[in-house]
Length: 249
Image 1 (tube, rainbow, N blue to C red):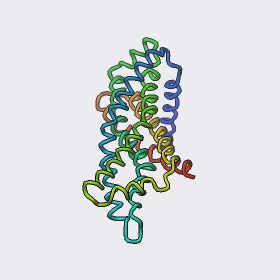
Image 2 (cartoon, rainbow, N blue to C red):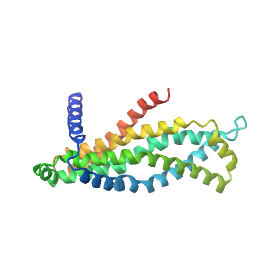
Image 3 (spheres, rainbow, N blue to C red):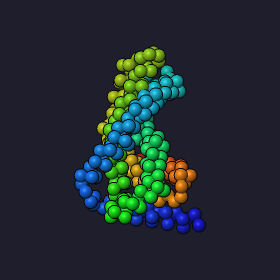
Image 4 (tube, helix red, strand yellow):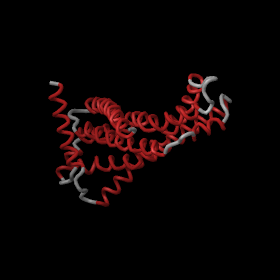
């Protein structure tokens, strides 16, 4: 029964995505919606991305210093490990898991509220492709903004590592700098951005699906928001395994 329900849900998701990616009926209207979603989903997420990344970068630096560095290992290994963790996993995968809770629940609640108050039905009556009008700008907005959020996350994490090394003296900034630069590969940045593009699509499309298909009242909207965040998180983790295996070979 669970397998049948999962297949049926996936089929409904594909049918909705077919409507979402139809050609916008009004380019000017789509552009206005796109700018609005860029501000709401992308720009408004910058503060939390910077704050969390700064402290996580500091914590990673401390943990690497206390648990990895020893007399048998060079001092720059702390900066090297901090860079690898930020680039390969945190600033793409873990940050998108955090955004799934913030952005995903917001999208589901917004579209779900429109569904239960029959605003979506009103759009359909007026002949508007409601799926394209409501969901497509959200997907394109977050997908286009996520590389900027990833870069901001990496930058804030590095600043957090520098901050903890300067103010606590656990290591010199020169050793940290050498470790951050040691055998640096630009491909790691591209890997992080490529993975985040897939994760951004998962967050917006899955959250929108749960909101668009909600049935009932405000209680069901809250339940749909929770289900959307859980589903996004599971799919992001699964996609992370697949994409890491493909990109890092």
